Image (cartoon, rainbow, N blue to C red; front, side):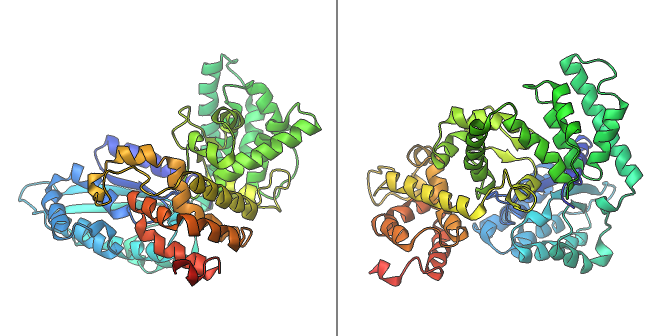
Length: 466
């Protein structure tokens, strides 16, 4: 289930395998991140990493690329066969040589957006057993979603499984207790707290609250250990919240969010709530993470103001000090929690309204920036491979790239809140300019799908092209 510690297990195993030189490769899926939300990059990524540790694969991989330079764009089965299976099978088993053994870690398979791709991946992975000179095992983690369960049913003899949320509660309690003890030991050293802080009774209450969710324990520890706050006061805030909640994540997230409003009067609290929804609402709805500098144009606030609001949310968000690095969710349960009106009303994010705001902001960014020959190329005959990435980044910054890639994504999800006339007004002026940018950033293949979405929603009529 969500929050039981799957990614922590896979990260730990990957590190230990790396230390023992047994890690072949790893891929961590992440929903709503362009390169990690689909299976498109799975096998090219695994192949690139495997070749480093098993250089005997290199001739087979090179042949696959020479035979088909676009192999990374092909169907998953073809990628798997040409980039992984055939190169592994081509390695000769030399007499007296020890068999090469490697483990490949694939985390959060359920976060792959295509259910069909999930089924294909689970069906083809066991075929690595055909290789006699290299033994490959896969460690997969996932939520127990239906496509995952069905996929594993079809490969009954080819896998062993462990269900984290079915582990005996005393074992889970023991593990979470160890985690709290370890985290508090480091916190005492960093903050010069007494050797017995926070005490066995307080720790026991935290453990009981967290069971069976590791993410609950991790979030509480990040909240209490935030260097900008007094750890005892943060601990008291957690322990004082004695409400009976429907879910563990509510009892974890509510104290963290309530701290945003501590000491504020009604007017100040309302302002903070509005800014929270404007900034965090956008972050959790984005199709792929953006930096603070890029968020600036999508939320209409200065980077320092965004950073100020996010500084109190390190327990639930990864907020880099570098304004050009992406802000990320630490766990998808935080997004799910904020979008669930039944669980949370005060901090609730209206998904359709936020998508509307993002669609409108994307259109505004494009209207303000798009123009013919946006990169100021010397000739219209300039080929794409003659244009440097530095030049593209200079003229097409990340926020504009995001707007061109995902404005239709948000348009579709706001369910008609943006009028057809607004969309048509933008397209009649900037349609070709938009396509030019998609071509420059390597996403022109997505244009057809986006146009089809607009046509199906009646935002775009055929007379646009006449």
